[in-house]
Length: 192
Image (cartoon, rainbow, N blue to C red):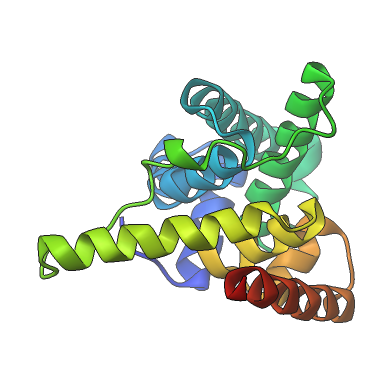
């Protein structure tokens, strides 16, 4: 499913909240499944775990939307809601594993989910592009976890500063400053 307008997205969320509309939720699912899976996979670096957590995310989102107490709650942004739930489930995953010092992107070689979709590229260009992506991912891996998360949310998931602010619970200004620092550190890593 291609990107839809924020208005249509809010309309779908409203249909799910008010009527438990499964078809509307299905459209939201189609819109976000790849993004959420990629976001989670890049944090847990395990295909099966990422699939399980992704399924759990959508189950929690469904339950949240149809919960009678949440009907009165206004959802500012569906993307903010779904990424917050995803982020919290990844945190829970690492708490269960009790490996807080483990790097969230340690298995860069397994990132097969990064698609090079443009069929116009010849094989040599695809290989070069894949190599560049892997170098960038390795450089991101060397950043602090906080920087990694913000870079992934902003540049891989293409979320706005406002959406990232809603997900992380930090102020817009803080997000901008931290992103600036993260990019500065990423540039240093790439220059090495």
